Length: 154
Image 1 (cartoon, helix red, strand yellow):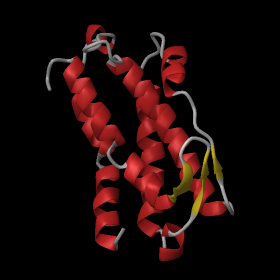
Image 2 (image 1 turned 45 degrees about the vertical axis):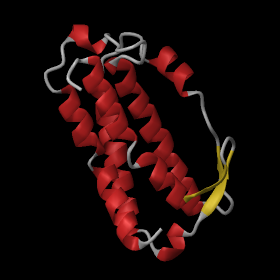
Image 3 (image 1 turned 45 degrees about the horizontal axis):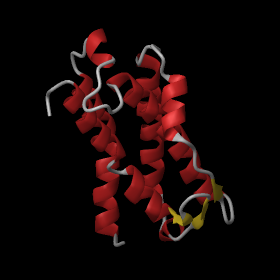
Image 4 (image 1 turned 180 degrees about the vertical axis):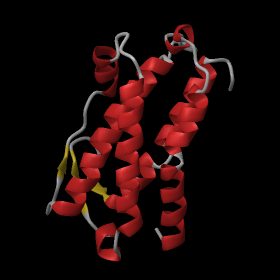
């Protein structure tokens, strides 16, 4: 991956929180718990995004700080079902925002040596900092679209 593609993906990553925030703008309590096509509800999505950003930020930090970092997968569906039962979304939305912001600051300062670092993911095998960026850059945008769909605003 060249520097311009990394910059584009970092910008996409940085823009993830505003995309989610916009998708949630004006959401009602009823809409928070309404899913489209049997998918996750907006409430579940917000809590998932907090979990994913916290986990993702830790994964990137491990890749940067540990030799042959071991990255462990987790069952996102079980997390969502167990950790979002009627819970308000504000704290999870803030956790997502600030985990993403602090991670974006790291991404923008990474060196060529940092971009060559890799570890082993328990489900994916070899997992590099570039793999991390490709995975996480569109993640919030994908879920923002899912929220809009659940609200009938796709």
